[in-house]
Amino acid sequence: MAKPMEKITWQELEAGSVVTEVGNARVYETGSWRSERPVVEASQCIKCGVCWLFCPDACIVRASDGHFEADLTYCKGCGICAKECPVGCITMIAEEG
Amino acid sequence: MDKFSVFSSRLVEKSENFTSGHRACQGCAEALAVRHVMKALGRDTIVAMSTGCMEIISSPLPLTSWRVPWIHNAFENSAAVISGCESGMKAMMRKGKIPAKKINFVAMGGDGATADIGMGALSGALERGHNMVYICYDNEAYMNTGIQRSSSTPYGASTTTSPAGKASIGQRTQKKNMAQIAVAHNIPYVATACSSFPFDLMEKVKRAAETPGAAYVHVLSVCPTGWRIPTQDAIKYGRLAVDSCVFPLYEVIEGKYRLTYKPYKKIPLTEYLKGQGRFRHLTDKEIQLIQQKVDKDYERILRLSEEEE
Image (cartoon, rainbow over all chains, first blue to last red; front, side, top):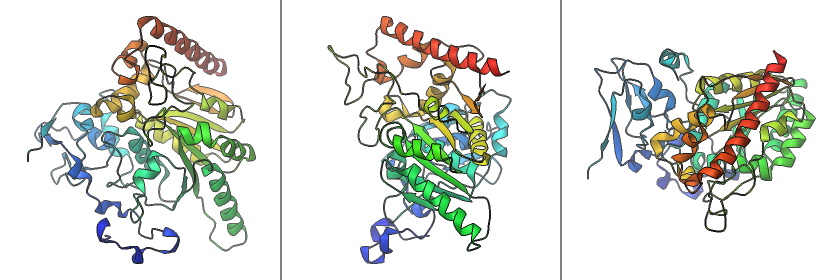
């Protein structure tokens, strides 16, 4: 994984501004934008994957027991997962602090 | 999506070729559309992308969200750049400099880059018949620079350069129908899709990539910021646009129309317009006029698709 963006200096850039590492935007944690966080009620989750399919940030991951939950490192808190969940097991809760 | 098909999302490609960490606004359905498209295309893909929302959010210099070869170019020439990539790779394969294999050549652009600025380059590439796919992400204005009108903005929408007020209804001209312009080039494959219908979208992109010759896919991408809707409703408004027949989903294979999704019950246009801030100034009379236009356009697509059956 690449260094955080603010640690990269201009001397380290490739000629022609070519980025040689694929998908290194993952070091940028968009989760800090969030004002609401999705909370999954795991017992109600039917493991259908609709939240995963509709997440624009690709931040929904599968937990070890098979249900889906949001990776809060990248979740921007848009609420699409909560809205689209067919059983309504995701609720948006305000972030505090 | 109906309750019976929900589990099919597990059959979708798991790998992400458009990774997290991109800077799209909350609830950006355009980023979602890119994610679906990249799932459908796979790793053997070269992407040329015009300036626009998706370029800005995915490639702030030392970082990139792309896991495929990707090149940024100016607003007007993504179709020209991908034509060059395709011809170059074809020549190198013929000369045996690289192993011959199937590579998807994909140009992407927003509605401004496609319908306004890159129109000439796109028309040229479609006419020359390069083996490529052009994908237009249509969010119906220049959202990246602050919601200025484009020729793809629908009639009546309020944007920062076509503001609604006492003397103006907002956008005064009709939306340019890019899919029909692509059809007029007699290319083998043209389709319209929407990220609220991901299976349909992925299927169409796959078919476009498999088609030898030029293909064009027009993807309606809801923009919560520019359409003035709550972020969680991005998927819902895509669905409403299709169900109210504002944006019919169809494909044109070798000139033959096929309606890929027919709404069970056509919903009235007000359902689609009323929640959007950009349309909130419209009166019932104006909505009636827009409804007539939508009905007429949908009738035409319906007639064309039935003729072929």
